[in-house]
Length: 572
Ligand code: ATP
Ligand code: MG
Image (cartoon, rainbow, N blue to C red):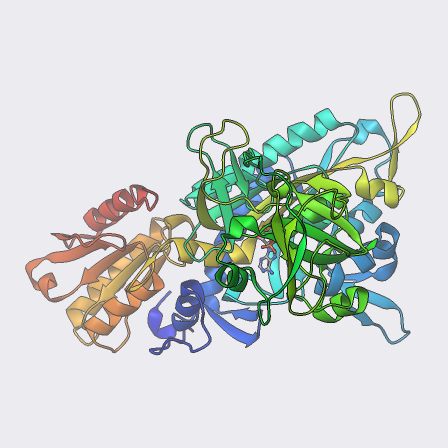
């Protein structure tokens, strides 16, 4: 490709609404353009990267025997109603009516679709296992579409689904997928973690997330240096070791605490530590409103509540819901006298004489105690694990890193096949629901995740395998005939050696060209400049400051280019 003909509109200014580096750089460098929040066009450079990522994902899927198909994005409501997810999936689902008032969704995922598809067509255990996948656009009306391609409302996903006659067969495909996902990360030279994950709205009982390390990541990974345990913060467990108080129970007192609403206010007002306070949070789920208690300095992990109660609809109650149900404003909530179910975290189990909301505006109780003052229905682990908590496996302190989830794999079991009555006939002639797995990879998110991991103050730094071009030939002075002619010849030779080459033949200054080459992040730059007169061109890798000159002889340059690219590694 010749840059003079390339449609890659670059911007000098940082786009004002770009809140992460990948979004800023991909927009500035002319890879993508925003239509509305979370909806983007891929311009030619962006599409080249996207197609290379797609190809890597496709090759790794094919290598483990998965077969590609393509399903519709427009899906009828009935199949979603059959699994209960028409309601459960929540407002992320984009729903609409056709002209006959029939309900549809733009698929946020395809479990219902594929299970309905194979139902009645895959009939016998002899045909199993089967793994099918597609690379397709997904729609999710995210609450906060942001960070460019990282959290879109329209985005590209590879989603695979496997069908089995038993758990052992599912385990094998799951293991193959785990390895394929690891290879995808490695082929893109990424620093990543494969971590234990919560199964969320998809359901099932076993899941791993593949997370690319990045400062701006929305996922927190807790990991143990000592034994290798690693999990997302939604899923992470820990070894609790809270003190058991030996105080004797004091008299419960209601005290006036005007304008004291938060734990922080309360510690200041009463001169106590957060560890003396029990926070009361109110949630709503399928079975109504309930209270969750946790120590004042800790946070509740909503995903753990959802998973414990097997209820994905659980969410924090709104101030209005709290007021209606308990007749007290948020800020003064407490378990004493609260006529709703109370669940408590292990962190408060050993506490005595603690402080809780007074269930009356402007009041708190001091010296509250379990059983005497209120009853707990169940003790559960609902704490958000953080760095420093003890590893659930070996007890060493856990560490935390931020990352971006690029893929997630799940063992689904028979959850969908049962609800959709998707059966096969086993060896004994009996009808059984398929055992299933599902495996998602965020293709468009990967593009941004790579930029988050690899960039510098001058722009993007692409790994060779997904760079829009592998080599750029920069002709410093396009009106110098000798430079231009050699540049073109070199460009042809590099192309003939099956390299992906961009020739910068634009009528702009050399400095401008160097800046653009850095911005778009091409691994190798070959500069054809003033020293061509002395029979030299310059070679420079994007991830290093070093440059050197070599003989301006086509075969020599091509050989050197291949050697340099073969050794180009971003991962430390
Ligand atoms: P997240 O927790 O980030 O919302 P998810 O758990 O909802 O993701 P999955 O349903 O597991 O995502 O989807 C598979 C993959 O699709 C994810 O690992 C991610 O890479 C990608 N993905 C999910 N949601 C988005 C989105 N809104 N924009 C871009 N990619 C996405
Ligand atoms: Mg996920």
